Amino acid sequence: MQYSYDQVASDLFRPVRFNKGHIIWLGILTIALFLCLYAYSIQLREGLGVAGIRDYVSWGMYISNFVFFVASSLIGMLMSAVLGLIGMKWIRPLTRIAEIIALAFAAVAGLVIISDMGRPERLPFLFLHGRIQSPILWDVTVVTTYVIISALLLYLPLIPDLAMGKKILTKPKILVKVYEILSVKWRGTKAQWDIIHRSMRILLILIIPVALAIHTVTSWLFASTPRVGWNSTIFGPYFVSGAFVAGIASVVIAMYFFRKNYKLEKYITELHFNNMAKLLVLVSLVYLYFNINEFLVPGYKLEKGDAIHLHDIFVGHNAGLFWFAQLFGMIIPIVLLLFRQMRKPFPMLILAILIFVASWIKRYIIVVPTQEHPFLPIQHVPSNFLIYQPTLIETAITLATFILVLMIITVLSKLFPVIPVWEMQEEAELNEKGGQS
Image 1 (cartoon, rainbow, N blue to C red):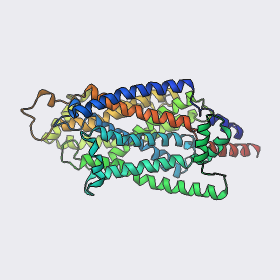
Image 2 (cartoon, rainbow, N blue to C red):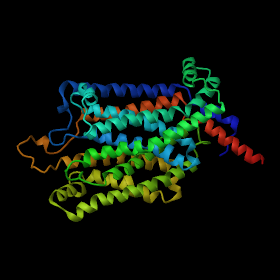
Image 3 (cartoon, helix red, strand yellow):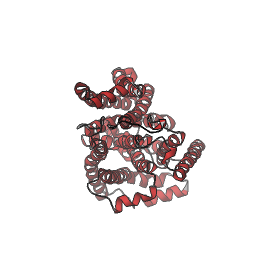
Image 4 (cartoon, one colour):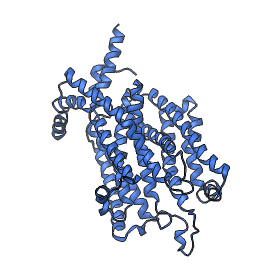
């Protein structure tokens, strides 16, 4: 679907306002968040005993959530840096959506770690007395660095749009003032464009190793232990490939709702869904390869600890969750997306939601079952120590982080255009010149 140069600004700035529906939506999210924060206040007062985690399963939903959030945040790097640097022009309308999602998930990932701390007031000690040998310190460092770079990658391409927006928007006046401040006296001179392009290129190159490090270091937190299920040499690429699957699912869901709610069918087309589906099949096949490796090798050797662990996730207590994650997170989407009709917007939305849920369950399967099978036998402990069971309070605190992500995405998508205006104007100008010639 074609659009003219003059249409672009009016189309893309039109959703930049808080209407009644969005106020109600944010109000519902705020009420839900306060209810979840009340659950967290109970945990602060009573201790981590109110959650399902115990001496043996000391990492439960909280760490599963952290791994998932870090995974989903990698989509910013994949879309903006990898695909952008190799010249995939079709991703232009999607890069800002990917960066908003990446920033939201990465920023909240740090709060997820705090939810797992029994004494969160001791968090500053990690920075004051952290040891360079500690993978946890590495994790905090790369997460913080990734958040900063993601914020810059979101902000820098926004500057020309902000300068344009302060002339187009008339209200609210405070938003116009914010646009004026953030546009940093942008006049669109050749020197300013050179600075923007050069800075973005540096950040796009820099974010690739940082993004790979953020999830590789997270995988090392598991792989550096000798525990069955985590003692693997492929956890780095295994986690990174799975991160791309979860991240693409997040972007597809956002694409569908922005396209429908913001009336952006001219800019987020069926071609974009088709290409995202092909990209999803590619990364899912890579992820499936690592999954086969992850279970085939210990299954072939079948040492005692591996046998107990594999029996549990294949046919035992955690089998239902495991097969849901494998089937709906990889195998079924790969098969269905081979058919063009399944690469339309609505079928893609359904598949993306299934993949999103399955991706979170996959992190749960990575984190929890291994801890339920320690090398030493579990004996002389209460019955609730034998099997991990998330509590209502733990579930509410976990939901709070998803609510925060939704609030960040909602606010950013209403404050700024979700599609780069100046890039779409460039494309429209080229199309108009091509049509005239």
